[in-house]
Image (tube, rainbow over all chains, first blue to last red; front, side, top):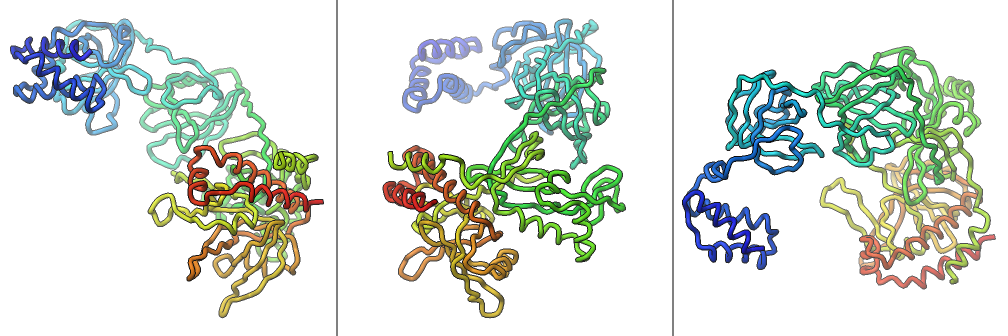
Length: 413
Length: 186
């Protein structure tokens, strides 16, 4: 193994007119691999760099003179780290997201489209959309499970007269369902209905909310830069070329510049998996009890103010944001008016009367806390994001039948 | 954007095990990093849930109210301190007549005496009067969780390893504690 690598390095250097004794290369490789447990590839790289420095050879010269890179088509690109030549047309230029990148976008030929990255350090001539070029000595790479091409300092770019026809087909992303999304960084196609649009919290985001299909619900982020058509709540769409991501330990989908969104006629039914959780109600959070909602958008008001519509005359509602804890994990629960009334035996009218009498909305919350906190419940309902939307709730019995005997048996075994 | 916050689980431990605990630490040097108390069976507690009998309470405050309460489970007593920084809990303790079953969600706290002993107590976040059924369920559940921790104690789970090394835990002691606790049940 070391002998082969040494031979290879020796040959490479002899191509640029430098003779290095094989034994010297071998001893350096051996030291790295055997003594310092360096992986073979790293050792190779390190030794090459050592001799480049030793003989004062510019890295660029050394690597560009390395035989002619093969000329390939976009569809031939199936491995990363290969040096290639390719003729292609610039299909799209994107806003570059990082100062280390000079230009980024898509190039294509008759076999497909691929992303490219032109590094700022490469100091290459600017590319124009719609023009065709020959790219020499560019490197294939892989990013987020997709191949791309990097243009670096040793690359050359020449505009060509030929107008290359670009195939519209970018290698197709797999079509999946919401419940299939279990890894980040996958490009996918998905058909789903917009379940909720949220206030977007950041100007870089155009729209944010939840989409769902029959297998579940997932958060999406539509970047402002993506310049995609606006989505409407309750409508179904086909989303193409979107990327899975994970944020705060939950999966989400990002819609970016390469994504396509088309409204579809089919009305997708959102299915949610019913979840059950049993434990102690350890907390009831702010925003519970008697609350007011915005008559326009139904958001809960904070001190009489709607996040979207400002100061409005709200309508009363009753709800509980509870935390259930079983000693091993914690579950957030949202309890709507109907279930809250049944659970607390306080109706919305009772709550309004209590608040009017005491001139304080908080009395309702205090009363609810007194009645529920520290008790054991079993809750059931669809899970949305981190909440269970409680449809059924019941007090747990003092103990399950046979629980004591089972515990004692385990202890005395 | 929301911060990477996840609520600490409320652990279930019996008074005897809680009283035997003396290893408290933080996971990082950050001043806002949560404080934990590790118990002999490897519960790493920042929050706990207790149901027991309030047997004694006393306002030991000089200026403001400062309540010390004793809450008893089948294995021993928890000491609870609630003052001006736990207003809801302090008010609840002030209002309840001993003896009563109460449920407490709170944080563990330790105090080292001059002779090096570590005393544990609980700072309650909430205190509520509950019924006997809740108390029975808590005893069974706490036994269950303790058994789970004991079964996990010889694993290479970091909390279990730490507990084993620090306490050299004699599992038979806690086994007997659980048997006695459960046999006392109706």
